[in-house]
Image (cartoon, rainbow, N blue to C red):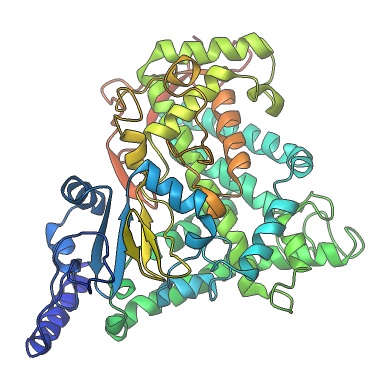
Length: 532
């Protein structure tokens, strides 16, 4: 939180508390009417609840939650300003809420004015309230972008992007003597997703620009004070102004790509459309996907509210796909490679399995990775030990209900602390250890990552709001990791060992991005360093 935010909030809190001094007795997070017994929680200040306490602790929110869990149990309440937060941490309660009673907990809480700038009134799969709009958008996404036929049809995109990935690794390895894993993986996954959305290859420079702007958007939409105290929104006009300016830049990035593709579609895939752009107006834009194969094609004919989607909605929906898929996939590859760098024996087992399926000189394809059980175990253990986020996206019940014997008010913000489940010693033996073998002959056998059969790890969420692109994301992680290990042996940079300390950058990432030296496996590769 910015210092100015804290000062403004502090002044406002003092004024509100002085005003409240003459009101009836102060309230706390646990002082509710007997007939509305919320989960227990820490007592709070008048009006601001526990918000000021969290700010004054000056540490990541996740550590506050862990302490409160130890004190209040698997479900507890925090009064954060004008919002009631219910934190759910147990496997059984998460499964009950999201799977057994999925529709009841499937909507989203109200958005702040800043978030609404980017979601255009919640016109996105992730943010839409549970109802007709959400069903239409999600059904279209599943049908048009991630069905098995479409995934196979777009295999050329992954082949092209990964070839470029290795070219960048070669160049960076020769220049520096090592490579930065996360930045390269982000660019590669972002390239794939941009091409899936717009059906075109665009220049690396433009991809980097789009990636940077969308990263700013994600960070701009992380929780801010007005989210919890809407009454203070007028005091944060500069914040809202900055959001609108960022939105303008986001539109400038993506609207030209949408219009080029629209011209391509209206031209019947030819005619007035150019191979170097739907209308030939956008430089560095090579249209390659056939009609109907790009995500935006399906959106152009969609009328979820009785009208065609405008540029604002199209930008929001495409940004959602690019942002969500880029961060989660690239982060998973970096964490997995960290453990392979630290444990060369484990890396050798992955390499041996790849060679067993494709040989030393073969090329790993998308069908191959489905058969690689040890590779799959490494990826699953990565997602267990380093889930993309400590919490799922916020949920809200559609009506007042009960959970764990407590009342959950309608529209309360319900946060599912799923990272705790992956660290629970009652569910996992030695949960802090990184052991892929647990998914082959240990306590991870038969684990359902969708949470349908029980919640032990749900890196993509569970129930009605489970990530619809889970299969595509897993494909990107497995394929990219397999290709990287097959081509190179990865070792630490001398005097600069990897540091597994976590930090939050929308997803949970390494505080110090992973740097590694690549040793080519084969003479013919000639990439990234000295031959092994």
